[in-house]
Image 1 (tube, rainbow, N blue to C red):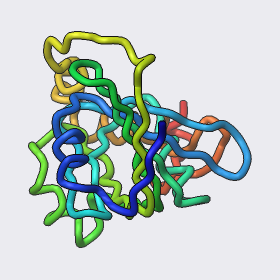
Image 2: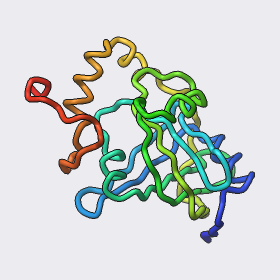
Image 3: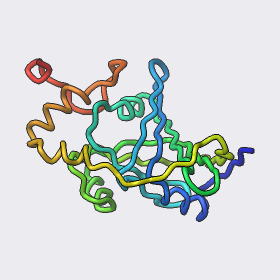
Length: 187
């Protein structure tokens, strides 16, 4: 049975910090709902009602686009080992990009990752737990380094060009907050 809490308890925080993967859900008023898996030691609990997570360049940038239109976000954590549990954090979020003043302080709380693109700050207004009895038991072997390896091979110019082509707009055409691409960068 689902239980709701106004804040992240120490027990919730311990569970969150143990998970090697979490899922981010966002949506604009129109268009597609996005759910993305995240890993790479990229989430920090800052307090009972605030978390942040580091996002790196990927094949899309849906979360950024959605938050510019509607700042709601859900993070979901699932127990794939041990006792069954699903934990969701609901709230409003905002994005911090590398050119913003607060980036430097926030980024120091994460391991340096190539192609770090945004940090999301989520103000949590509801924590919900549920049984998770249908979530399968799985063994975690290790994190993947593939994305970091690809990013380490790119020059700053190549990374910027990739972001312009793949990350400046959502799949529904919404801007993501990155500068608009020029025609030369799109071809």
